[in-house]
Amino acid sequence: MGEEQAKDQQLAELKKRMLERQKAAEAEAQLNKVVGSLLSAEARTRLNNVKLVNKELYLKAVQAIVYLYNSGRADGKMSEGQLKNLLGQLRNKRQITIRRK
Image (cartoon, rainbow, N blue to C red; front, top):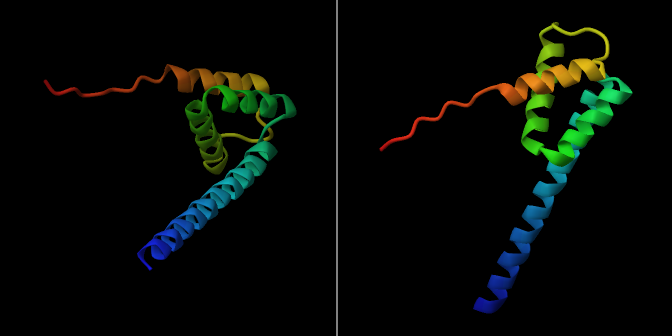
């Protein structure tokens, strides 16, 4: 019985992980749809390329784009040049870390 319970537990964990991945994929697809509607075709292509190369920068850019539109700082679709400028600003931000000796 112990072996069967372990198998059932493993199966339950696997199902849970698959569900979490599915939810994450759905959320990302919805986010891509929203952000895609805020960008020109060229900007969307550039952002997708950034996503392939640097996931962290991509996520920062998406957050910044959504923030800009929600705060009313951007109107119309963002052009590729504007996106390049935004990406440059995000890349150049310094992160301050405190190290203990």
